[in-house]
Length: 464
Image 1 (cartoon, rainbow, N blue to C red):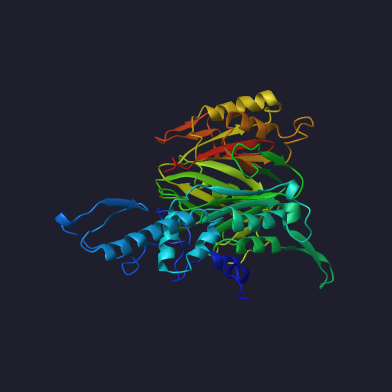
Image 2: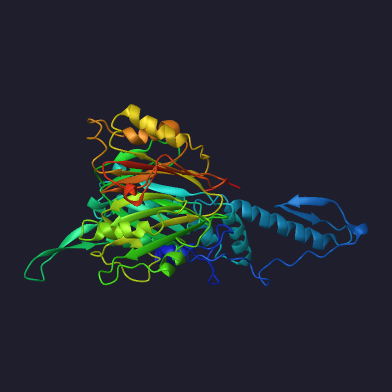
């Protein structure tokens, strides 16, 4: 029996013959997926022009107008049937269960490949895959890995260019005892991270972090109630395709005790400096419990905190994946990672829920400030970065208070995030005409908090 391509290697199923990856849009490439247009030799030959007197009736098939010449009925009939077949093929491609199925169909021949390219260009919406407590309990495999594998095979209809995933640190990374030395020590293994990375295209840039708790909107609809999962196996993956006019770039700075200076070119290469279209920076410090890690995080953030951009994030337990990095991850290292969002179409806002926000009424008042920013809610993602000290216990044994308040004011915006060890952000609004509004005077020191929550809206432009 011949093995399927998906069985040989999950990543290979995303590829198309000829060494080209399939594009999902026309925006400038931000990762290793390059915009791939058909070459001259691959394009369909132009239909021969007919004389004005010989133009027959025009028929609209598969999005193209075809002329039927009465002088050469056999030839024209063949061309018409071919166009009908191609139009039907493209229509059929739209009903394949997943993007990987569409990509596999593109391996049949050149004509199929062209149809697949056209289909994928129509799929530009951000997709998410989530796994909660109901999906947990399978021995030997984290629920996020299992659910992502199932959804990519069946329901994901975009070609991801950038993936941001978050998972609980208790079960996603495992600790093994290493007894080869006199003193037994624990070593962290990243088997789940490796398994997850293999499910996405090789050209896709994957950034993954692990945190004490997860905030996630269940799959199926943005209207689903977001869940604050403070304890237990859980996670989510946000899949960003190429989006016209928007550039998403991962960045990573590793703390080097011998050289704590950040060179300007390092920040420029990842779009954090000399980038007039920079709008949003999500930033995460990892392994911040180590000596000097928090100071390094503040040093990195201070290099771009005075710009007119939205800045939000927090401190997490560890970095699990960063496929754009050339060096293998050192689990014991400390550093700063994140995503920069650039593009004039982006609108964003953040609001800070400080320690005085401690009941449902004050939470709703804070989220109302975010609502007042008038950020469009279509094609918008919400983030919530909360302290592990908040949540169920903070609100007197009442759970999901902040996520429910967000849903009350933004019922059609999916919410994602984590419970971490420190929060980064402030009240700030970046609107369409790029006017920065601050609710108070913000200094670098005022960007770092504890026992707070940062809520963020990121609008990725109107869908076309």
